[in-house]
Length: 188
Image 1: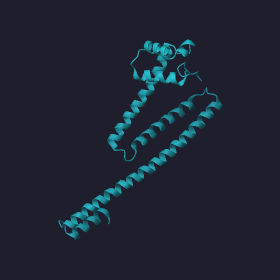
Image 2: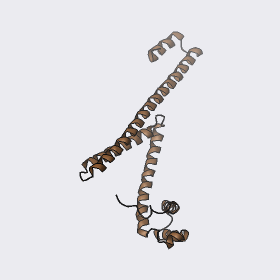
Image 3: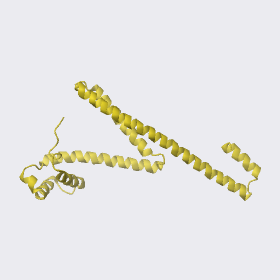
Image 4: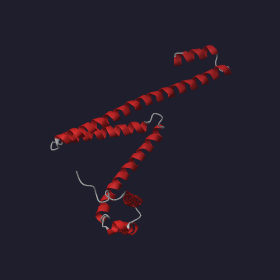
């Protein structure tokens, strides 16, 4: 396993400051290093502050994570806008994405013949636990979607029944014709 970067080994306040500045993108790397030296003189004196290249590498990883989060957020917004999300389509899309990633990870692990057998078993066991959790989540989501669908159907039927009853009360449609329509449409 690779060792942690010098940025990851920093105290949380220093690391949080670096992440905040990188995410904001207002400072160059040289300006960020200078700002770190001024803000955290103890770390600068003990030479525990990261180098310019370490901050750059960490910034690239942070930017990839932020880009992935932004893309996921945008996809969730698009799904929510297009579906209204009464049936929690975002969770369904997220579950499918995670299932795909887990499947790919298991295939990659299976193809990696040089892995230590004990480590491989541990990874497979961890993956199995995650898959079980994901499967339970998927089942719960499907149950929720079925209940939401049934509730929507019952609401629509009640609205339609009310409209048909209103037609009958208004006298616009003869009662016997209205009853035939209701029976034919709803088997009532």
